[in-house]
Length: 504
Image (cartoon, rainbow, N blue to C red; front, top):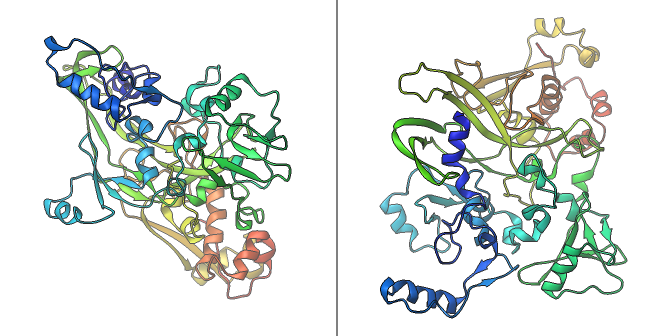
């Protein structure tokens, strides 16, 4: 199929099943390699001897290098970088690098060469990045493996339908006031093996923490008082684990919000990516490992490092949130695709507007402001533009008196409007960068996943009702803190000067 052809040429090179066919350490441009992809490490002696061996003409090589590279469980972030600096760009995000569409000018690079730290970075594959905000876990010295366990990376012995289903760790597993823990014995064989390889032991009063899904965290130790510490897997150094602030758990107004919905300040986004198929060019099938006729070509517009959109993920494994949780989303596939790959075939164009859930690994301690969610059209999925709340005319106010929310104060009402910055698509009428329509419920295929959706019209109205309050009251004000505890009661005590929205 067209999709399979696209996958085999542009996506499959990163998978671990790809063979490692060249000697040397794992680097930025490495792909695949099975166990080597994560566990292979060349120390200075091994790297020096390999370099000398490769510099020797083939017909004069008599012995292989005597110093063998190591296989280790002390996996650093460089091993993840080759595959995870593409697509969602998790590795570069984590370090605070955002990809540029075009290379910086020679003058910019010359000026940057004397700076410390540098503003620009050139990867081995030729892509330039600019420095933005790094993930707080990275700045605190955490490696990828400090969060992601062996069960996530290598599986737990069960087939999963999607790679996302293998991610089992949650923010709340470490940032909590009540830890789930596992007794030191009996532990599963893999946990015992990992503890032995690291030569880590537990005091009689200590237990290992566990995730909400039951996986043991070999590097999180809980004492009898419930206090927990995390140990860096690569260095062995200890770090304190901080519980969430009271602002994160206060009231019911934000009960559905995930941690990342507030603490993700930016994510890489592109709404103008384009993929075309050149029937005359030669492509490479990474699964079959051979050249094929016809090649997929990628091009793109500007990349943005801005706050992601918000939407709902139906979390069927979480009984506490049967209606889903609010999480972060970026454009995953806004495309017009001609499915015909035959030179003499008729055009067969399909249009898709699909957003993807993202855990962008750009977490910061500071959270988004109330206004950046309730009054921002991008956050609500409408795309860029002007989202405006204004007092409605007296005629409009009179006709809205039947609205139960405004019945007690019918003359003090307003109306929201939205003017998109992007042109509307001829396929679905939505702005080019939108996920859903303003005060609309979008139906059908909306995402690259089947368990997520944009906010429906009822949710949009609730969010914008709070947004109307925020046009006068700061998010940190006393009245808005009270509203977070009980919004209905706060609204009931409003003065006549307060303006609430009416809906078309």
